[in-house]
Length: 452
Image (tube, rainbow, N blue to C red; front, side, top):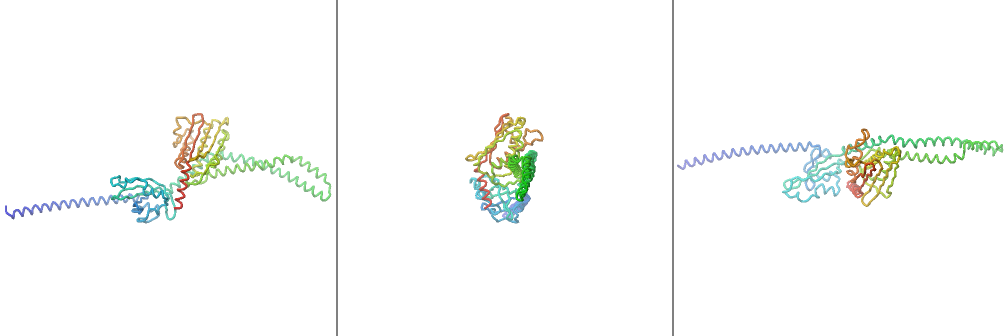
């Protein structure tokens, strides 16, 4: 084979190899283009999901610099563009909340490139800032590794409308409870109003009698000064004194005034209690006087116990106030009292029911005990009494939300405990405990959030 034939064969092989390489390059380019198109579509798809999400989605670096800020985040915080800004400017954070925002409580395993890519941190309720207006929001935090660097993701939900709805729902509950007790409250007000009216009528008539005597004494004085005959006037005065029974008036006058003042005080107490329970409910935490809440609740539902039970209170005067949601706490106390009244219906014919309410301040807790000698709780349902919508009452008497609400308020809203000890036919004791240390810590965190 000549040298020329060898060159031609080599040329053919190189030509074929070049065509094959060009074909392979074309295929790779087409695959790369398609992959790029798929990545672009996926990116557009992901961006559309993020941009149309109802929650605000923010990503930021471990230094707090915002990397992305979706449409809902712009709406929630009222900012057109926050990229490049420090995420701390969007919230009122105390030291503890700042540490949680950056996951400093999480161990270092996440920083290992071989660890899980995404790590869920926690959900927090924080105060956000929108045009100098502070609002409550829920922030779900995650941390991910992106190119061996940590990235934080914050999913933000504005709780303003939710809290407003909860406040309205709480207000409806309050008004419903007050409405259910309205007949008893009306009776409680009507009784003192009746004897106040009777006393005023008595005082009005007594004043007319006294005014008649005063006029006679004035006539006696004028007659004495003009040296007229005094005997007829003195005789008339004696007659009127006997007619009006002046000794009786002297005895009854102060008593009628005292009873009227007492009745006015009773009415004022009930009206103040009604005002506290019907006031618009808020979720703002403030100082709660536990003893006063108990007295107020008893004033509201006193008529429920009038014919069936005696109420005894042993309230610890050294009791410190706790920090909580006053309207919801008052409602929880009222629900327990109403439940006790229902349990003691068996004593309506004899009036031998007994409700004992006791408060006690221990080293770490505030304890509130409600003991009644009612029908008790059967053993087979004791574990269910705090379940929502569980009730043993007749249709129309209750929907099973009373004790479920108590559990939610005491345990979930105030970090306390509530339990019931009972035996069927032997009465029930409800024990509520509130940890004073946690309440103080809540107040301190709220104060720090306000000033930060």
